[in-house]
Structures are given as C-alpha cells and as structure tokens.
Length: 134
Image 1 (cartoon, rainbow, N blue to C red):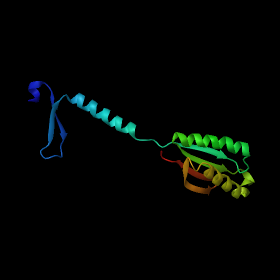
Image 2: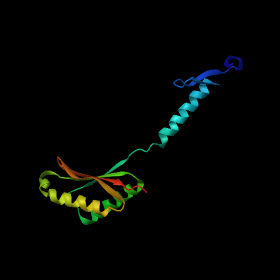
Image 3: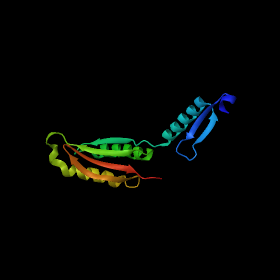
Image 4: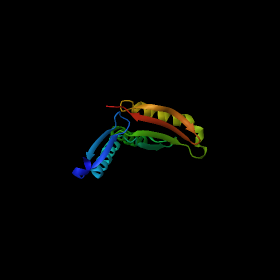
C-alpha cells in the first residue's frame, strides 16, 4: 500500500503487540520527532547559581549593596551562593564571617530558604540559598 502511494511504511512502536506502523513520509516523521524532543528540552528548567562574595570585615553599606543584588537574583529564580573569603590572617574572624552569612540568610528569609548552613571549606565560608517557589 505504501509503495502504491509513494510513501514509506514507518514502524511507530515496535514493542506493541501487534507492532504499530503508519504510512507516511519518513523524512517528515524524523523532522517532527526532532521538533518534539527540542520542545521537551526547552521546557526543562536550567538551574542558575549566582555568587556573592563578602570579606569578613564587610562594611554596612557594602553589605546592603550586595544584599540588593542577592534579592534581585532570588526574584529572578536563581540559586544564591554567598561566601566570605578569608585572606591571610583574617581567618581569625571565622565568627564574623558566620554571623555575616546568617544575617544575610535572615534578611532574605521571605525570598528564599537556606539550602545549606554556613560551612568553612579552606579559606571560604559558604552558604546556599534557594528561591522560594511562587
């Protein structure tokens, strides 16, 4: 039947009993299949991680400035990775860094939830904040 019409016999689902076949143009079938896969791929969300860096002795104005950026990132739906970087002997101020990150988490409480509490890794103390779903 397919040869009479000048089209191809395409097996749609080989695992079915009996196997399902359609008479159609094979190139068109492949094109539509790729189009469907591309549409599914576009629907999946990509996780974006934005970083904000603090020092252990960050000033109040700098903190507020960076907090505004953090709010913007969370409103856009990106995850936030805030970290305090200790240079040289400033590692002595671990408590200051932890207090700074916990304060940031508390200030951003209505926009995001803390995924990971502050952890010291080498010279960095990191905290992850994920946006709250709408």
